[in-house]
Image (cartoon, rainbow over all chains, first blue to last red; front, side, top):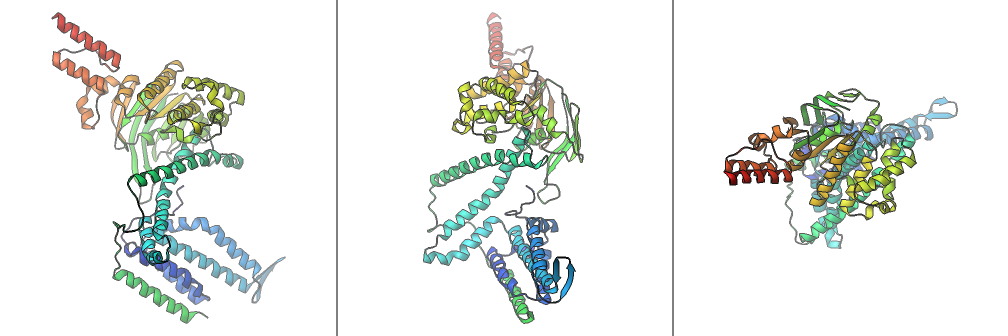
Length: 264
Length: 289
């Protein structure tokens, strides 16, 4: 339960913590695009430097970043191996019987793995340094203009904030039910695989039951307090765009120009 | 099985910005077959403490000895499952742990996990469903069709079916109506006496604690603030007030009666019946003099 960091905001006072959530969201979004500009060692080094500096500036313990990467590590390794063994470009490096490894494959493998790594790190930074509520408010304001074409932006944001709000609650609930069933002799983390798989049912059924009940209660409570949704509703959180946020965009612009100049 | 807790410490989320010290320097000994109550405000560490008693939580420092099981900080006790067979925990709102299609299947879940043959487990279920105040026709029904109070009873039966020798109750009557409370507490008290269970009750109710327990522990901010038998604890109402806890209503009533008529009763009074008797004695003496 400890290594899931979605919505696990780590409080802090760093430059990145203090950025406007809109700026961070846009940066993460733009980063996803400019990552694809990189296509040689130099440009990847530039992206890597940007990512590492961002991690450093956030002053987050590295363990958190690593914990965020752990679940995706297998995917990265798999991607790397697939590229190494299946891309047949450039000179042949070595030959392991039926497996042939080409230079192009290794290069491609490293690049794609790095790309994934950077993406995950930057998006983890976003969620680690921004409270879920701030993220939601940020998304809502960013998507604000879409209301004009009839998109239910407010409802969407509400759904998201509810979902985010309930992640810790559900985790807590999971832990509680796990404990209760462990006390009745269920085995979750020890014992043969077959036993552990069987113990998922006693965990999931109560979890679903309580999630549905919670949803119903929440809907009722909102209705009882006269919740009406988007139109004319003001927010207690006012976002403020500051010099820091503009600085971030200037850095991002320089990064993009650098990538465009250095890419081959 | 005797329980002995020595210098127990526990902190949640160790080594993260969220680190929180939940228990510190807990020394507690619960002899086999006694009824122990643990009282304290929300967040005082009661639930954390009881979760150490069957290895659901590991101590950060200190040790817990339960019979011949020893749980120590930094060591892995390999026989946790064997230990859990002996220690049954009724968690807060235990009805949330129900999951099976039928009530019978849910009750026998625990016993089957601990290797009880299915026939015997079913016999236990049939016996227990009556003990918790439902009848055998319920066994084939779905636990999710029941009312909250009935679900609570079924969940309790599920824990009792393991035949633990130590029974831990974490606010078992929270959210029940007064009658349900009396029945459930009566059941636990009966089991405690008839089967010689070591019972540990976590509660907010001073009345329940006073009425049933041999010993009481009062927790405050992760440590033990007061410890002793009911008479000892409730005699010192100032110390309790300092912890913003109340003495039981019956004790308050008798105290005021004693003051009013300037008499002292030979012993403490915890049950309603005893309070009525005591009040009568005082009034009768008053009439005679």
